[in-house]
Image (tube, rainbow, N blue to C red; front, side):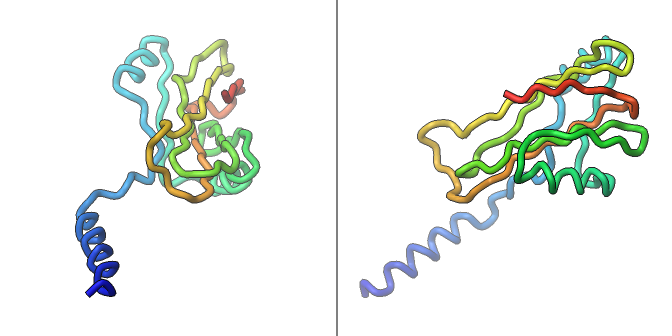
Length: 147
């Protein structure tokens, strides 16, 4: 009877997790308030999701493990590809403040690394937080600050 207990616990756990939605695989999108604020400044920002140009995919591979950032110019946009390097658990993520236009073709971007909340459950796996921000200006020079 005791030999069946681990199997029953596993079955109950798997049964309880069936039907729970998976976490989204896309990067965060800007809020409506953020888009409105940027539109007032005459600048529009868009989220770069899923189907990146090949050059952006290559840049993601490079910054994923090493960290840092790089600019990729493709399809009439400048993509800011940012990586935080290896982190000891899941739950880390990069969060970008709204892009600020400082001069013609000059932009400023502040990115923060958010750690998982203390005391919360975390996946025990090395994670590599990344973020891609698309600026609709292929000649953009973006000053990126990662904190």
